[in-house]
Length: 369
Image (cartoon, rainbow, N blue to C red; front, side):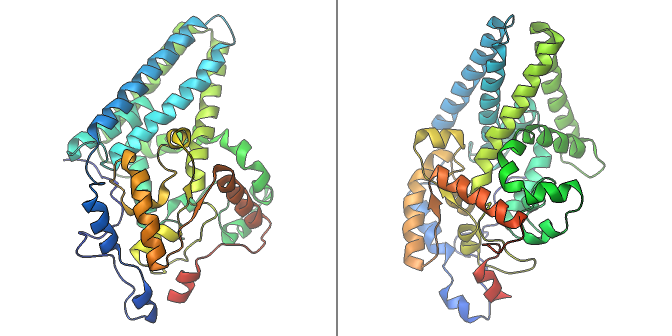
C-alpha cells in the first residue's frame, strides 16, 4: 500500500472538467479546465521524463559527495563553514526531488515515486515525508484559502489582517515589523521545519508508515551527527550545523514564499472554479536556468498547481500554453521578476502587519459568496 500522492484537487478526468460554480451568472464566464488539459496532454507534457530525473539525481548525488569531501579537506579551518552553506543548497535540491516524487512526477509507478519521495525527503533531508505531504495536499486543494490552506497558519508571520489583529505580546511586535523581519526570519525556517516535522513524527495522530519514517529520519540524523563529530571538534561541528540550518531555511523560504504570498486570499467557505482557484492565487517568477534550479521549478507555480504531476522539465513548455489559454479566457495570469516577486511578498507582509488595506481577498471569491 502506497502513501498519499500529491496530485492536487483536479477533476477525476479531463472529461469531467472542474467543479463549476453552479447557479451563478458568473458560471458562464468561468474558464474550463477541460480544454486546457486536452491541449497539455496533446503536447505530451504529462509524459514522464525519467532520463531528466536520473540526470538530476546523479548530479545532486555527485554534488553532495563533493561537498562532504570539501568539508573533510577543510576540517582544520573555519572555512569548513562554507561547505556547510553549500551542503544546505544541495539539501534543498534533495528536498525538491522529494517534492517531485510526492507529486508522482518522476516515475510511472506510484510505488517508485513514493520510495523516491521518502528517500529524498526523510533520509536525505531529514524531514517527515508524511507530515509534509499531508499539509501540502491541503494546500494544493485550496491555495490561499482561509481555513483550508495550512500555509496561511504561520506561527511567525501573519498573512491576513485577521491573523495580524489576533496577535498579542511579542508576536504582535513581530507582526507589526514583519515586512522588515521577513528575510532575517528565514534564517530560522530550517530549524522550524525540523521541529514541526519531529512533532508530527512523534505525535499521536495517525501517520502513514510511521515506523519507516522514524527509521529514515533517525538514520539521517545519526549519520549527520557521526560525520560532524568525526570530522570536526564539537564547537566547529555546532557552528557547521547552525550555518547549515540557517542557509537551508533561507534557500527553502526564498523558493516557496513567492509562490502565493501577496496573491489574493480566498475567504473561508468560498467556492471558486478549479482553474481560477489555481491561477488567481499563484504567481510565476521569470528567470533562466539558474532561477529554475534555485526554485526547483516552483517558479512555474501556476502550471504546477494546474498539473501537479507534470514533470519539472516540462513546466517551461506548459507555461506557453497556460499563459495563452488564460489570455483567451480572460483569467488574470501573474508573472513577475525575481525582485518583483520578493518586493510583492515584503510589501504584502508590511501592509498586513500595520493593518493597512491591500490585496488580501479575492474579488472573484467575494462575488461568489
